[in-house]
Amino acid sequence: MEAFLQPGFWVFVLALAGMYGIFSLGLQIQYGVGGIMNFGHVGMMAVSGYTIAVLVITYQWSFWWAALVGVILAALLGALLGLTTLRLSGDYFAIASIAFAEIVRYWILNTDSVTGGTQGSLAIPSPNGFGGYTDQPDVILNWISDRLYPIIGEEASRDLSMVLVVWPFFLLFIWISSRLQKTSWARVLRATREDDDVPRSLGKNVFRFRLQTLIIGSVFGGIAGVFWALQFALLAPEDFLRIVTFYGWMILILAGSTRVKGLFVAAIFFGFLYGATRFLEFWPLSLLSSPERAYLRVFLIGFVIVLLMVKRPQGLFGKRQEMVLE
Image (cartoon, rainbow, N blue to C red):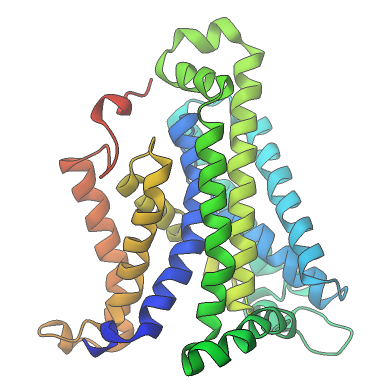
């Protein structure tokens, strides 16, 4: 339990919360505004992160230019997903979105000559003869750490630098999203998700609005991939499993699908839950090894989602009357 008293633990929690908060913001726009149940959101995160890795390692691009291309590709893939499957009803679209994310992951897994395959970004072909692009993220985060060191000393860590990078963006995106959801565009989308007759009467306009919602959410998924690539540098296909999307859904359900401003609290709770499981050393958890305790996060996250669905489906900050869908 001593780990919970260490500043480094809470800094890591905040860094993780910022990245997953941005990731969940994309789901909030898609589901909370447009009523789109996207269970393949992690695919956008994977596309963005791996685009950065390939462009930086193979083509020697700047990290930030590669990040811009990664986010654009995530948006384009969101558009492709929408154009091909968005006319499906909710359940069928959700299944199709899972399949889409799995296609992306298996393409990454089996394209060794581009993505490094099972070995991840370490095996991406490079003019220097080896993969990895830790130099550029290290330069960015170490630049911040070097300026913090004279002020706070040894507490100036990589994770703290990441917090100072990701949280201003997270809070800015929350503000932008909250403003966006007060527009007539958002009101039309809410009307279409709550009334089956509206989509039939508006036709192509509704499809276009929902497609825009899917693309905007995909952009946030791509931005989360940028920060993931910045924080962890070395990427692997296992970073983008289906469970990652449900981490985002847990944050969204906890906050309330229509309450964008509750996301930062829910994200911090998730970051604590995700990071704390490996340090739960009291009996009977002490009978498990540290990796086995870390896997408890999957059980706990599933348990919290089920509990919320039963006891408070509108989330901690939502209203039950706003849960009406179709």
